Image (cartoon, rainbow, N blue to C red; front, side, top):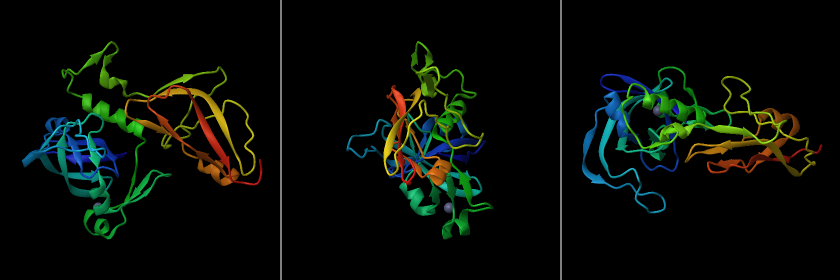
Length: 263
Ligand SMILES: [Zn+2]
């Protein structure tokens, strides 16, 4: 996800947007518009958004759109959004945005570079680079933004409080010697996972390595296991099969593939 700044008529808001290459349009949450004075324009014909599977989206019919100045790092544009009622994301940037600005996205370094001719001519103020925000951190920040100031707003509640507070990532040790995942540096893109047992990965083969950790992810998110560049470069160790579903509660295991000639 990427940090954006939207400039409403009275105030600006910093929020994390989802870049979704499967979304055919750009969406903004109605609550964000209302709260930060982003002026909505009534659409001529309200219409229902359909999902890829042909079912109508739960976000309801789109009745309004908005045009709002949007900054991503020093990249500025006048963004057009369909206003919707979102459950998961405050702002979604879809395919048309990717096509229009055509940024280079380095998924390993979580770096977005606006280097298209359009951007260097029209959008950029100084640096063309923006860094993506890890999804768990981005969602947490958006929740803080969402609940700031608007304290009295009542939502569906569960025994443990407002449902939305259940967006945190929880972790549990399954064995005493397991190490809790840590961030290598404050700005690291993700958490380092530690093996719970010594495992040999055969040359040109692969092995499943347990971490001794189980995690609980927020509803409708997934976790991704990515190779460490240092392991990849020094030992030619890569990870295979790296997606953790939000409802998976078992031990996180990593499939390590050894592309080198040394076990
Ligand atoms: Zn641009």
